[in-house]
Length: 118
Length: 110
Image 1: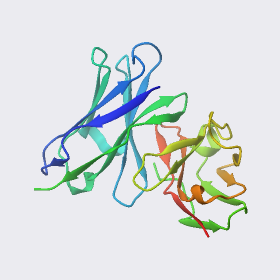
Image 2: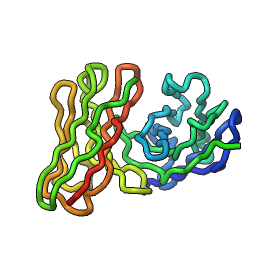
Image 3: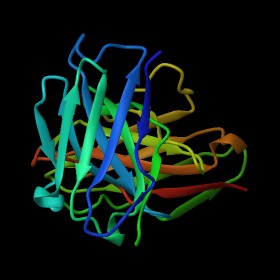
């Protein structure tokens, strides 16, 4: 079965770049129309869509995050990555990667908490 | 893109039915049949319960049903059970090629 697992530093200093990786197991991301989406959840709050990237490398980001966000894919490692630059305390959240199947998200990682603090 | 509007909380007794609404605009819910619903227990990742307005993925109880009318979507849970107590989020595809979520609804089973 498909499983997703986020990994990366749990603590990032203000103004630095947040970097996370999503490793997919149970399926090859290059075997089909695979799209990975990043979603975050601020403590005690709702979900915020960050953006998506396909296994071919086509990406689309939430305009509210401007040019701070960038995603990439490494098919050889079956991984997707997220980078968010110039972070502030407002970027403290649980970050999820999720597989998009058609127009909904059917598989999610367990999430990883990233705290922005000096 | 503004978040979809959901009630902050709903409650019901075991065996009863409840409905959670999700209000959007013609640029999201009203414009596309791409509304989905997610269940989230504390400390857990969201779980897909409904896709494409009213489709139940394999493994989701048929006590969960959903629909859409105009710019508003609804999720109904019938025969409430203690295990249904969780947060529920709606989501919709939008005209700007993004997705938007609702603020979430906390369901309490009394």
